[in-house]
Image (cartoon, rainbow, N blue to C red):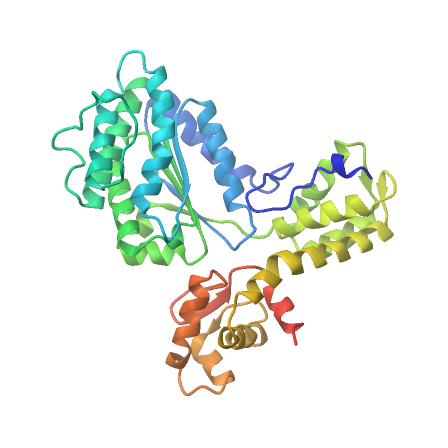
Length: 391
């Protein structure tokens, strides 16, 4: 089969040919979109959680596309440890605000731009090149405290966009990497948005690992009531089947049922694996009907690709002490979370505290996370199988 026509797209953030299994999420976002467009009223924000490769980043990108088509102000960014939350947010907002400024013939966004300028000055974020005569808004977003100034900024943006019939969408990827104070500031601002009547049209979608809800709750006691929490997991068989079948039908290609079953069993419903398997089977196939032989060769190639690209790189980043902990987690958990005290016992350590250093280092490297206090789990499905095959 011609690889140029291959519809499957494995890779971080790459949009697959169809977003199988996510229809309910898009239907719910359409309700949010319509409330903002028709009533000028916002809704309770979302937190999307899931392991690596279940499609969180892809979904943020799709929500961004929808909102931009509506003419909204959209800020999409990824939290990075080496950059401040305020800096990333302001940089992402600036581009969208500049576009909105050009379309704002009546000047209804003018005061929001002034508050944005106050925010950037207060947070010492450098120069954002609006026109020189734009003055910061006196008394707004000027305290130097992120929670206060972010609240001022988002409230003013909400009021301004309501006046022109659009909304604000803030999309934050890898939110679990934010500092506790940054999470607290974000929740404080969104809490204030929720208290306006009617609710201002500012909508947040944060995405992160399954530990994110507990991190948000630790930062703000009301976070568990502030957001709608949505878990993204592996696809059920029907949706996984659609992810493999529908893209090839559009190329006048089909699957033998037995071949499809081999591919589905290999991918186990994991969205990233489905794309790797689909791509590899296509590239191995000799005709427009995928056979059992095509599926067997393709799934073997996909496993090698995943091992080399997804797993091996993570394994190579671990020190010997960290690898010992990863092995214990793979042996004891079989892909599920394990209590640190159980890992310590299995490794012959005197107490769980003896693992605190490699545990914290592995969390910082993004190889494991804490689904609950005192428990560790892998961030990537299937990593435990790879580790158990290592010497």
